[in-house]
Image 1 (spheres, helix red, strand yellow):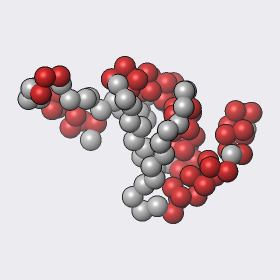
Image 2: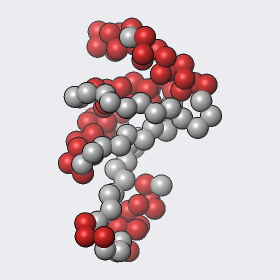
Image 3: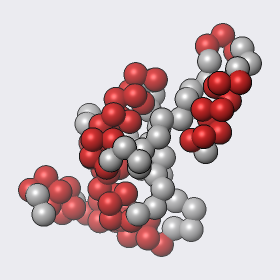
Image 4: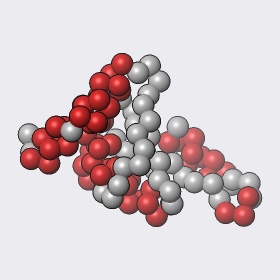
Length: 104
């Protein structure tokens, strides 16, 4: 195991999160993870649990970065970027609806 994974796995909070994820029927909420750690923790949780994960970003730019980083860590067929809502409260166009349906 690489040193970074070993260090993350050694934290009690991470071990508790893994245990909670194994026992949870519907999922676990992990929040307030700083810096680049959301992507690393999401990738490690996925590798360990093999359950679907949802990583929510504050901005579209953050979401695109998370998706790019997770694609590098987990592979192209594992990650998807769920398109956000359009600006100005307009209706979704057919392409946007299709993209959202494909991810779901």
